[in-house]
Image (cartoon, rainbow, N blue to C red):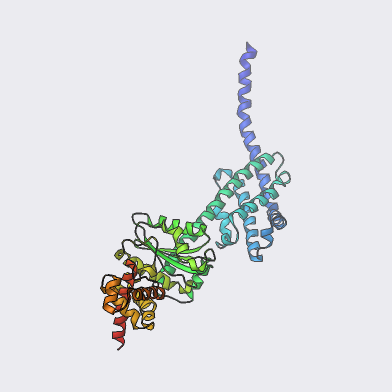
Amino acid sequence: MNTESEQPEARGPVDGADEPVGGAAEDEIRAETVRRLERSMGTLGTAAVARMEERLSWFRRMSAQDRSWIGLVAQSGVAAFVDWFRDPSRGRPAITVEVFGTAPRELTRSVSLQQTVDMIRVVIEVVEGQVDELAAPGGAQQLREAMLRYTREVAFSSAKVYARAAEARGAWDARLEALIVDALLHGDREDGLQTWGSALGWSHTPVIAMAGDIGDEDGNKVLDDLRAAARRLGHDVLAGLQGRRVVMVVGVGDRYPAEDLPAAAAEPLAGLFGPGAVVVGPAVADLRSAGASVSAAVNGLRSAVAWPDAPRPVLADDLLPERALEGDVEARRQLVEEVYLPLRGAGSPLLDTLSVYLEHASSLEATARMLFVHPNTVRYRLSRIAELTGHPPSDGRGSFVLRVAVALGRLSETRNE
């Protein structure tokens, strides 16, 4: 009985004494490990950079300045780990400030996230390979556990740094895109356009412009969808939101034959705009010349309401009559030069035949009677008109284009007298 009653009394003081002794011993081991780490910080950083040069081909190809910045990041990482390991009660380490804060923000453009992961792996391997030498006797497990926790924080912080850089770069790119689109719309042809385009990685030509509305959709979502779709097709793309209107400039490259442009390039993208007309400007040689395509697309969108049955997408050149009636000077010039002048140059019989034909409800017989010619002669002249202008007089749409073009041509001659 006495023996049994004495046993708990004997265990109590021993259990109570073990905790402070164990905690003190652990602190002493940690302090000794910290001293060893501090003495080895320079060696560890140098060894990490040397291992990178040996293992990572992309690191060897970098400029001396970028390699020195990465070496500084590695040194800072080791120093920050030692400082955090000294006092684990501080909680999570401030990796972003203590490690990545030493390098310039531009380094995220030189080093990808995958390369950063490779770099972290190399540093971990270097430190892990020397754990037994770096840790105080009995402290190897303690050091390994601390390293695991710290490297996890480094990985999370790396992802955060690159995510913020990507977000900031995306916002800057979007503002620059909108600025370029606005400059093109206002006829800016300065060399700065090429410089801005180069900053966004623009390289493909020829160039087309598209304009449409967003409807009830979220404007930023429409822009993102258009950019993503165009880039999947291998195009360069600039897009800007102007109220409810989306203006998009596309560098097409050699994906489509020249004779199929701009319609072939616009077709896969038209469905991503909101409801209503989608107008495509003519293909031009480069970004500096894109203002003409942008202006045609925007003016076409403004006047497309006058042609409710227009195809989607519709070419800006197919909206020349509506654009001319809306006051588009370039559309008026095109109609006169591409339709009226070829007819006048071919001689008065064609213009006279067209005028009579349009005035008599497109009747061959009535036109032949008025001109005192055979109906076959009228047919021949109408076919010549279609060949010269690309607009058949017998077609409803073609007759409308021809009527507006002839009226504008005659008005232009009156003004020039």
